Length: 187
Ligand code: B4P
Image (cartoon, rainbow, N blue to C red):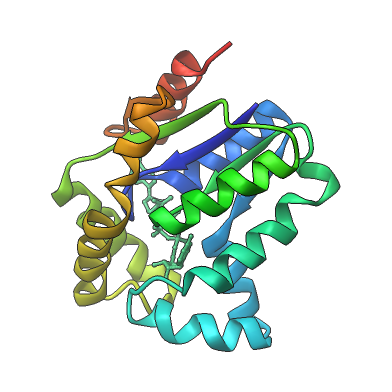
């Protein structure tokens, strides 16, 4: 199973992707997690990414695409993967298409988590109490929602036209959402 999980910041992508990757026995590939690990270790990639992430902006496509290409080529992603937070721009969709073509494979679905806008802000403000993430301040949280609407929401039309989008209600408890995802997954 090869899936993308999409939704605005706070929709529960990371939360659900971890459980889902275990379920399908594949790699959980979170671009946000990879960037944060690099920021933590102050690698060259981390230094580039940090400026953008702290401001709630997307890291430039050429940086993100190269990083995902490397990760997708690894052994644990061969049979199954959950892409969490990638693609986020039309350019990233094009690159992912080419990557999967060259690997002789394709996506099985794009899970869209649908959550009320105010609930998104509340979840992220709650996470801000403990996360220490520079992008979890209220101003940046709101900006990230705007960036998602402008840059990433249009991808749902692209994947929708391919018949790949699986909409899942992301409101309610983590367990409720997990159950809905499992019920909605393709065979
Ligand atoms: P991400 O790490 O992807 O951050 P996110 O959008 O906030 O999602 P996350 O997975 O962390 O949160 P979730 O919704 O699971 O990206 C961070 C930054 O990295 C981006 O802004 C960008 O700068 C950069 N970046 C990443 N990918 C990129 C790309 N492809 N291109 C360019 N730049 C990129 O959960 C949020 C909170 O809600 C958590 O606290 C969770 O516990 C809680 N929660 C989850 N489900 C819940 C539920 N059902 N009920 C209550 N709370 C819930």
